[in-house]
Length: 232
Image 1 (tube, rainbow, N blue to C red):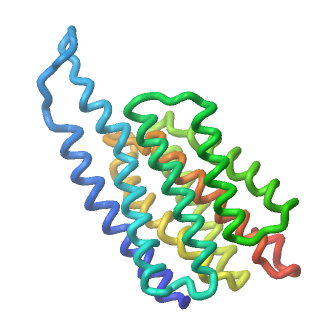
Image 2: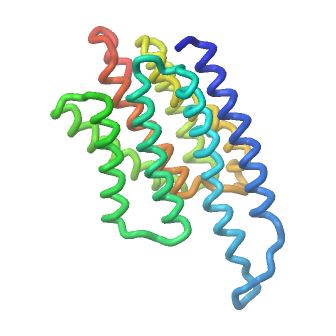
């Protein structure tokens, strides 16, 4: 995979996310007929919470398209597993945004998705266990950041950009694919998430971001040459 492929995936993620988020914002801000005492329209609040699905679809579509075009070369299995795991926790988060789920169920699905990534990446048992714990921990840590306008999105952009730099410096161009798309997609979403936020990433976008960043970091660290492993 070359630099142009990474740039193309980022540009695609940016434009797709911006377009989808704009549509979601219009739907969220459209006047709704109140259906609760006091004149509240809960549907608008739900639409704002699930706005993160726009970022998930934008990043997922761009990354999946790059994989389909053969951009990841020999690391396609690892990147596909990473994307599949992140998509699974994003789908779980979307359900949680609509109807809260038990914490035990969320942890079980996140753990299963992390194990999928670790198995497809071919990590050793010891490294795999540590990677699973790391991925689940960071996924839930990011889910706690979606309480202030622009906070989670900004942290995600900066972290993804850092991982992108690590992957490029260490020569893991294929593993730079998802961080590049994620940084660009979140930057596009930030246009609607900055104060005052019109959309939020919600559990879906937050868990997708945390999982993708944590798993990317673990795989970049595992693939880094011994002399440059400290970068990741």
